[in-house]
Length: 163
Image (spheres, rainbow, N blue to C red):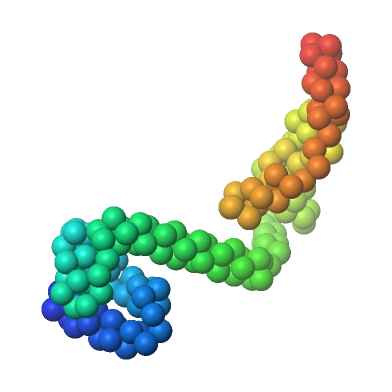
C-alpha cells in the first residue's frame, strides 16, 4: 500500500504527464489513484478540491460519476478476461481412477454424477441443468436463443393432463 503522500505525488505526476492529451485522458489516467484514495475513505468533495488545487477543475458529483463508470468498465473488462480464459483453457475433466469396487465406466454415466432430465426438459430437448456459469455473455446468449413457446405450452398441458 502506498502512503497518501505518494498517492498525491503520483496524482500530480499523472495530471502533468497527461495534460497534453486533454481532460478525458487526464481523468482516465488518474482514476486508479482516485479509487485508491476513495478506498481510504477520502470523499469526492475533498478529492475535487485537491484536483482543483492542482489545476484540474472537476465537480464532486462529476468525479463520483466518473469513478463509478471507471469501476464498472474495470469489472466488465476483468470479467471478460476471466470468461476468455475459461473458454480457452477449458479441458475435458480427467477420468476418475478405477478402484477395486468400481467398473471402468465413463464419468458421465456414473450414477452419482448422472443427473436425470425432467420430463419437460426431455420433451423440449433441453438439458436439466446447464453447467456453464451464468455470466452476462451467457445470459445474452440465452436471451438471443429461439424459444418455441407453443412447444412449452404443449409440454405443460401434457404434464398436467398426465397427472
